[in-house]
Length: 202
Image (tube, rainbow, N blue to C red; front, side, top):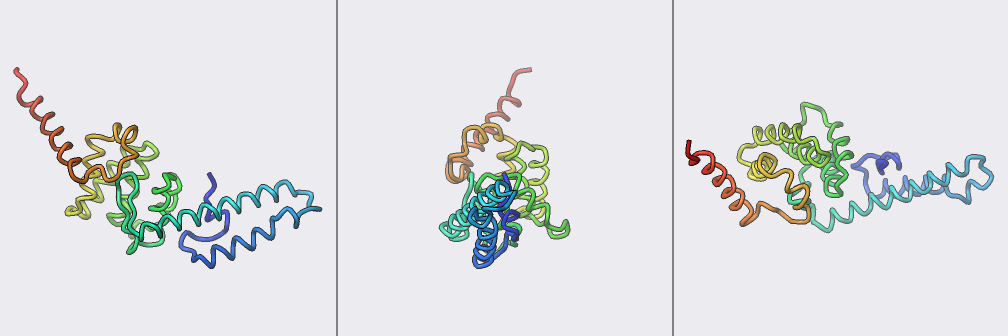
């Protein structure tokens, strides 16, 4: 899947006006009516379609973000993108749409010195989404190390350590699996495993 921002030639932090301006400019340039005598009109028509799809995708993601009031949840994980950088907001939008590779591409543009706990948290989610569970565990551990009091990070780390496969295959439709009884069930499961190991007769 093409990066919609690259198709329109804009950055993820572009304003609505900048997005519309880029869309109008490219639509006029590649519109079939403007390329009737163009020997490469098939390529122009394909580009025109890409521009339409890119614009639709960006505006849909923006609309979803606004409808959540800047504090959305995806797959059980929340995004407080009101105080986040442009790159982290873009990454959270991609994760919400389950475009994990695109999220990682955006995250890679952040300077190493600027990568805080939230960066590692999003990276962990995106890496889990594409099956890189080893990297996901390393990055969520780094997030917890940077912000040890953040329960959101600690719960996700528990999920990776104890329930990754089940959640990926069965739990994607559920909102915030660790709220309420979820964390209690996880704790009981862990205690049960410990009892089986410790109390087994030699």
